[in-house]
Image (spheres, rainbow, N blue to C red):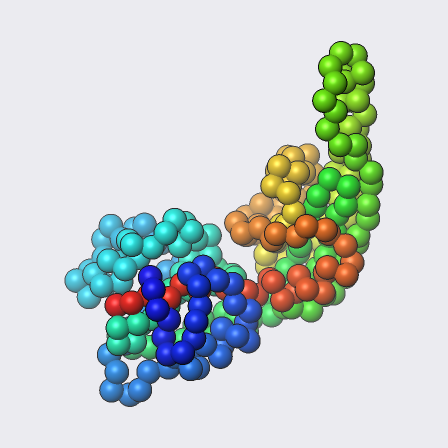
Length: 255
């Protein structure tokens, strides 16, 4: 994976927002006489495709085999677009819905995916602060943000350390409970309409939260694997999160 198509300079794995990606695709569109191809693989279809690729698909299988793990393990599938000796592998923000290959440059399914106005629940959580929000497309519909003090780590031993640990555990549980209550208030009235849930913040904190919040159970099959790197969940952050939700990861390839 090296040079991008045309004059676009994209680093492997770079995140592009929706409008920038649409511009890249428009500028990369081949002429009518160019040799080109496209491939769409849903989540879970990449490994089976590599194992059983037909003769016509061998070129794509060869290029995907050389891709890094973040491509091969994509939780939303992949889109591959090739023209001449160059092209792109794209990890879209939302799952590819159908496995299909084209003997031409075909962006319609990807553009349709990017244009979809999905209803998305977002949970941002770090020890001390959380935000729970609902989006329609990139637009923030509603949200709840709060902060609760959580003591830092205690290095001394003895009974004081145990007492400190109990206090800290109680504070962590309190912010978990507050976040869970916000999930119930924000998500449950529209639970059937939520297409996907996206998490962000500290992984260990989020994993602990998922274990204790019963209101997240009904959304388990709708939680996307990617997690937003949000350092400070707060109301001002939520406006930017809407754009992050529709970002794609892009990898330039040579054919």
